[in-house]
Structures are given as C-alpha cells and as structure tokens.
Amino acid sequence: MATPEEYDVVVLGSGEAGKYLAWDFASKGQRTVMVERRYVGGSCPNIACLPSKNIIHSAKVASYFRSSEEFGITKDNWKIDMSGVRARKRRMVDGLVEMHLGRFKASGAELAMGTGRFVAPRTIKVDLANGGTRLLRGKRVIISSGSRATIDAISGLPEARPLTHIDALELDRVPEHLLVLGGGYVGLEFAQAMRRFGSRVTILERSSRLVPREDTDVSEALHQLFADERIAVHTLTTVERVEGTSGEIVRVHATNSGGEIVIEGTDLLAATGRTPNTEDLGLELAGVERNPDGHIKVNGRLETTAENVWAVGDCAGSPHFTHIAFDDFRVVRDNLAGGDRVTTGRLVPFCLFTDPELARVGLSESEARTKGIAYRLAKIPMVTVLRTRTLSETRGFMKALVDASSDRVLGFTAFGPSAGEVIAVVELAISAGLPYTALRDSIFTHPTMAEGLNPLFSSVPTAKGAAN
Image (cartoon, rainbow, N blue to C red):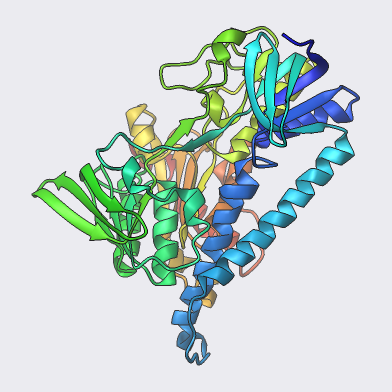
C-alpha cells in the first residue's frame, strides 16, 4: 500500500453536515480534505431540497395562470415550457455550486472529486474523477455519504427504468400520465407539481391513507386537496409487477381491496423511500458497523464503532432532513470543542411542500394518545386567518396541543399557506419552554399568517376541559 497523505480531518461526502464540518475544521487551521463523488455541496442544493422547491414554485405559478381571471388578469394562449422550467432550476443549481466552491476556497478545505472507500482504519482510497488515485488518512474521519431513492424489489421495476426525484427534476417535457409509487414527501410534492404542469397523475400508496403517520384530519385534508386537483389516489394498494418502460408506456399490476388492478401510464416515478449510501464503502475494513437497515451504527454523539470516526446525516439514520443534518454538524462540532450534546430528544420540525404546505413540530394527537399524554386541543380553520383571504388561499387549518395540567405547548400542526414559516414561531416557543399564553398574547403584524396564532391559542380550552 502506498504511503497515505496525512490530514487532521477527512470527510467522506459533501452533504450538509459533512461540508459544514469540513469548513469549520479548515477555518480553524486544521488540514482538512473532503471527498465528493459528484455533487459539490451534497444532494440538497443539487438534486433534492432546493431544486425540487424551485420546480414546485414554477408549478404554483402555472396554477396562478389557470385561475388568473379570479385575480382580474386575462390570459390568452399560455403554455408550459418544461425546458424553460428546467433551465430556471439549472441556473439556481449552478449558482449554488459556485457558492459552495467559494466556501471551500475561503475556508481552506480541500475538495477531492472522486469515489472514496475505506481500505484501513481512518484511511480512504480515492479513485479520482479525472484519473489516478489518492490515499488519505485522517486523525479524524467524518462519514457523510447520504442516501438515495429506494427502488423496491418489485418484478419488472428496475427494467422499467423508473424516474427518481433526480430524473424528474431534469424532465424537459410534461408526462402524459405519471404513475407515482409512494405517497410520501417526494411522491406527493411531485404529483401535485406535475399535475399543475398538465400531467394526468395517479398515486399508488400501500398504506390506508396518505401521510399515515399524521393525524386523520391531516390525511383527509390532503386527500381532498388531491381530489380537487383531479389527482387519482389508490390507497391500500400493493404493486406486484411492472411492465414496459418509463417514458414510453408502462403498466403497473397491483392488488387492493377490490382485487387485481392494472394501471397504464407513460411515466413511472419511484418514491417509496430512501436507502442509505453505506454499501461499498469498505466500512468493515475501518471497524465501522452498520445496523440491519443499512444505516451506520452511531451513539447519541454520532460516534461510530470505530475510534475517531463519526457518521452524520442520512447515512447515520438521522431524520432525513437537511435541517437535521445541519444540527448533526453542530452536535459533532460542539462535542469536539468540549461540549456534551446528543441527538436524542431533539425537536424535529418538518414541512411537506405541497400547496398548501403541511408542517408540524412536536406531538400530533395520535402520538399524544399513544404515549398516554393528556392534552387540550385548539383548532381553527385557515379562513379564520385573514391573510388567507387576501391570497384566495383559505384551504386548511391550524391546530395546537397544550398540556392538560400546565400551559406547555406540546405540538403544532398547520396545513395552509406558509405553514413551514409559521411553525418556526411555535417551535421557538416550545424550545424556550414558553407557555401557550405567550403566543396568545403576542402582537403579530397584520395581515400575516403568523397572526393566526392569536385566535388559535385564544381558543385553548381551560384546564378542566382537557382531553385524552
């Protein structure tokens, strides 16, 4: 084996947590190198969060055109140009990549483009993208290899060459009939966006309802939204086999409560989950163990089973959100600086970027019941929030759970415009341990969506009206 190049820190993968750790270590004078196979900055700025929201916004603009008369605007002979939609997305991505390259240069962190694999403890061999190899050894090693779209072991599915979210972001045409396997975040967001671009869309979901981990009223609201937008949803549906080729003609053979069904479309999107990128990394040669589900085994401090090796983000089994990966960065950074932070028990907000958005932080009603936590429920329709009337977007609701015997906020759910922004206010209150009355009595700007927190928390029942 060749003599390794010695570094203070080697980071494998430039995802959210990994890149921030590389920049932080390098800026403090530690010799740091990051190994990245393809996407500078990881999936979020290139093929996931930000590009998908770019496409979703274009789809929302298209929906405005369809209803332009409501706003007093006459439209004539407008059409969707998917090559233009894609070009806008690509411009954004190019700008984000340049921004990331600038951060690497400013921090002093080295970027090695190529495929990395452990060949010994804390030692990574890199097959460089431009040819040749390098052998890197770090006093500390961070694994930030991310995850990828799952392609289920369904007969004929791999041969059908289904779209993943990566491919869907690169479409230069509107699919005639898009079949979506899975009713999770990716499936629902793309289903609505493609429908608004003009596709016929059908969703096939194994569970009894969309977003089954959420409360029933949330699922019902999403089902109604999709019905109103003429998106077909088949629940309790198990796909048995697939025929054909996505992009041409594809047939999905499935079973549901009514027996066998066959649905034919032109394009197929696989959106049934995520698989951690932990195979073929040579982890066994580094003493790094994996869990049965493929995620790297870590403790609450994100330490792996190998000394001085950490795993962060999706590959470590952290909730698959960029904002959680960023918190993983803070956990490792602070602990290496003498702190004592853990990932257990942290508050995890999420937002589904359909239109309207669905966002939650803290407990749902079903979770509270399962855990035997008594709560008081406050709920208002979005039409109560006057800002929604100015937008002609009154669909949805806000609801909050407050502890039955104290004024502590347990959870908050919003289905409506800017839901992802509004939950930040409630999350801060929960994190700070503020009583619900602080939100009830705050003065929020009028007219804004956050202003809806006043009537919501004003409707919290008194303690004697608590529910279980």
